[in-house]
Image: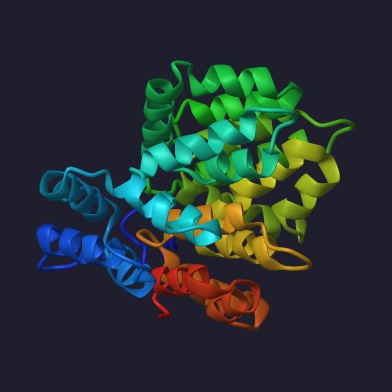
Length: 324
């Protein structure tokens, strides 16, 4: 079964550069920031074309050679959204995502969209990395903060996903697929009221490959999509959370393409979401996301970025998606 966008299937736009010369890169960056003016192009050429681990190695080399902190130097030389993007690139990936989730939960009100995007689309490995880093950074568990900031069925969904115990068995059992599709039908459309716990159990526990088959079987049984059933049976955050699981199981690049589109469509740009999506997916499956984006919206992701962003911020985003 072809399985787009899951571990081992990604088409990344940022690959580790070989041969890699962290000392040479550190010297290029130092030169780009020394004296009057800043050579932003040189900064983009280095940082947008190295993997996250390579950027961390460059920062270490920079401190060794010059006795200065690379991130502090970059912050003092850059500004605005370009600075935000470069600082995001310089963080260890799990730290960057843990902070995004923490900030979405902290403060007044919760940014549920960010929490749903991260928690509902992550693999077990990604969830465990985020949880461990979150605990180290904030001395609190991610589960504790999710419980404190959510309620009802949505809270149960978040806690289930936060366990990071989804099956990773990619052998799909047709009998179990049928049973799950029928269980979802009985828990939703075939009864008065909805049995949320069945949706929770199936969507949080089964492998993404299995869920893909369940989605197809549900369509076969009912003549309409599982998405349509969820929209009819649920509302609010729980609806959004369940839809995110279904969409990322069905077509993970397509799910992220939709998130990118939403960050840029209409008036104003949600730059925080745009930065998070580009930084977190460029080393995983951004090539697949670009294809999904163009197929879905009839325009390239690059043309959207061109129209929505400007200056070195735009150039750096384009470099990260392999278009500059």
